[in-house]
Amino acid sequence: MKFEQTGLSKIFSNVWFLWALCLIFNIITFLFIFFKIHPGNQSMALRYNFIAGVEWYGRGKNLYFIPGAGFAITLVNFVLFTSIKQTQKFFAPLTAFISLSVQILLLAAVLFLGQIN
Image (cartoon, rainbow, N blue to C red):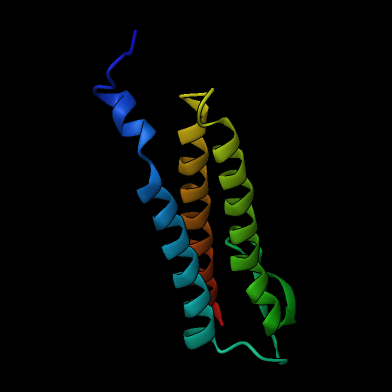
């Protein structure tokens, strides 16, 4: 007996657009760092706290770890997604939503660091 997918289950089973958005946000984050902040070997703010101000200074090239970490998180979640998508109908799409949320937060962090540097 074959069940037909309708409603939310059909939407959740087709989440490839979320993975594409994750990749697009990661590329935007990388390009923003490359073209707008222009990191080099000079000292730049790497971590900012609204209450205490700049907490960490370091080489500007260390800013590239932000999109690198985001890509690593997305890659791990994608591997997890492909391994559980047949058995876990709820948790598999959740990995895509989590990856997209992480990418948006990292892009926001880079945008705020771009205003400081």
